[in-house]
Length: 368
Image 1 (cartoon, rainbow, N blue to C red):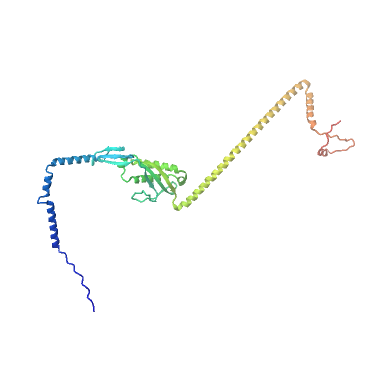
Image 2 (image 1 turned 120 degrees about the vertical axis):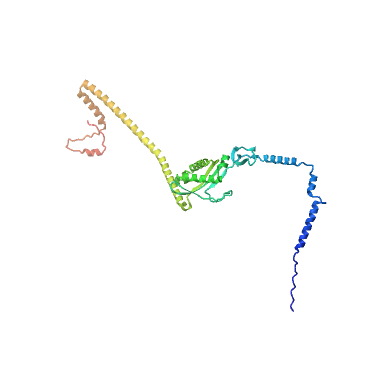
């Protein structure tokens, strides 16, 4: 026996006429509550404020509006800031100092306050995003061509301040950081394009920073930007990754070369003083020997001249032969004491080889 499933209850359709009638009755009750016992709200307002004069009220409101409008011209410049006041677009006060000031209300005058003590920072050539990087465009790499046609990757941090608020606001037509960044790029390209890669990577780093700073400031001044470069920090100047190993080898070879040259110079500096001292000693000894020989020769010459004078005097007195014989005897007195004399008996006809006697050391005897 099958059971018939129960029929779901039917929902009656809404009666829009009844709903509209209830809404009208509700609105009528609200109007009666607001109006009261047949009197209009306008009549109640007239009875409450009938003793007031509308003209005076309107005049007071106008005066209050004018005073409030004039008070909008008061502005405050904090420490480390400067204000620029422009009247209908023309600068009338280019550098307002810190304090409480007044300018004509808008739209006559307009005041712009610039922080002139803040040191702004711009990074050029760094691909990694910084925390305070708020530029719409992503960071890009800075590659320059050196004077000897080598590609170098450069990373630079530039710090700058606003020195002329009026020029900073009026003369720069786009973002100031873009002007600083483009000026640094142009300065780096110009300066490094005149130097070889070895000087850029090694010896000329500090000079390169100063030159880039000067070149960047000249370009900012040419644009009348009102900005001053505080510092340039050349973070890195390195070859691309593809040729980095070759540059390392070249740098190592250069270091070895410099070390060898320094060692050679050190050896030369240690050897040259000793050699110079020895040369000076040899020269001094030669000079002393020269002086001794000259003095001895002069002495002998003087002695000979003395003997000659005596010879000539004695020759004139005693005759030339006697003087000569005396000199002969004096000479023999000097020679004979150094001569060995041998006495040989030759009566029996014996001969003696004097060379054999010369090989021994016989006793010195004198002839009878």
